[in-house]
Image 1 (cartoon, helix red, strand yellow):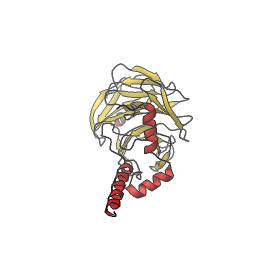
Image 2: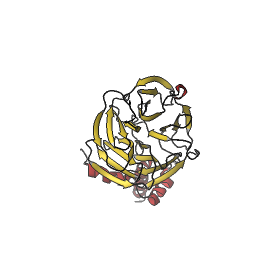
Image 3: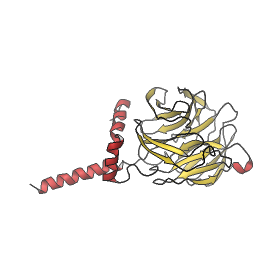
Image 4: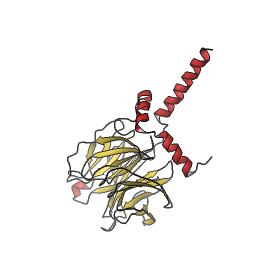
Length: 287
């Protein structure tokens, strides 16, 4: 059975209850809302010493590795796509990029299609077949191959003041965007139809990522910081995370989770199933 977009949206809202109820679920089922992301969060930072970072699931500690292109005094890597343990990054205004393994260990170089200052693609995402980048200012969403190369084509143009962050949603086969100026998060079909939107209450955020393990969004809350927020896909704020970066000492542009990993049921669903089974057994024995 194929669910409609509306049905999927209603299912998501049921999966991500308001914060008060979510707190009860945590008490019952363990780390449904862990301290930090559920999966490993990957992001690029174009600081004075350009660095790639990862935050392992269940932690709030960022582990940094110098970008491969940084010692060459080239423009920093920003757009990022992660799939099946492979990380592909690209400079936003040149034809160079890098491939890393899941620990940000350098594997090989890339020849990309990001030539020209007019691209300004800071964040990226992937569905495993193609990479997608959103052009700052215009909102044009461009399609690349999985190495950020090929001849870029226009998928559609996202609305908003300054759409900057982008994340692919495999559950809904859609693209989420975040706006640098007004903090609006929008969900689009792959054909460009607006499916849903909410205000995240933050501005000057750039990076946006979708975690397939718990169907939530992570977004940078302010440029120049290491502060992230986790929201459900219905717009409920679930937690915030500060990585302790000095203000305006880091420029986090791209962020992603590994979208090639198999999604797992949320712990809260499993917990309720177990509780229901236990209650049934008690009821039967009491008869």
